[in-house]
Length: 259
Image (cartoon, rainbow, N blue to C red; front, top):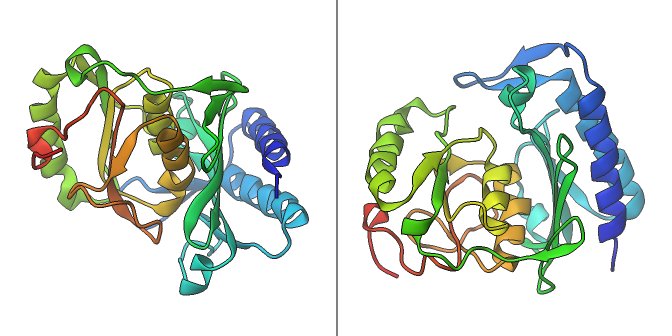
């Protein structure tokens, strides 16, 4: 089954919906500053329609419209995991980037992935075992040590109880790297590690639709991905995530140490 090119085209079309949106209606969900817009819902509906045509037997997990609960059934066969706009707050406040994220799980594990940044026309893609690509060109993560690169992190903004721990870790990472960055979109952050712009990404809690696609892209680019306890990602729901480039051969001690 090779439908990656069709998925790419759907992501690009979804990107045009995002770029064309003007003053979208904003809805607030549970959690601090957890927003959804009518554009999120429009893009998700567009993707579900198009992806169903490509793979009718697939189930769907998506951030909007009540599709946000992972079931055991989704761990069998094919399941598309969608984030129609990863970085909705960025989108609302015109603070770039925001990306469209599409993952295809096969029997509960990532099989294919597309992440698209329409503002810069940057399309990342991967198929399990076949490498990671940016606009059709093979990419690999940096082989430089953490001391020679940037680290990027997410603040898990919907979970106030994690703020103190997040910034304590960030304070300890800062002297180990060139500097810290925060973009506001987990999928973009992991893609930045995948393409060599950053050497490390971490966040204490993100949802499956935030990481499913980008984690495969980063893995295919040579990155090591675990949770904060250095366990493999489960792809069954929310988790902490650490994504380190090829050159970061050991987990920094502020994450618990060890290779």
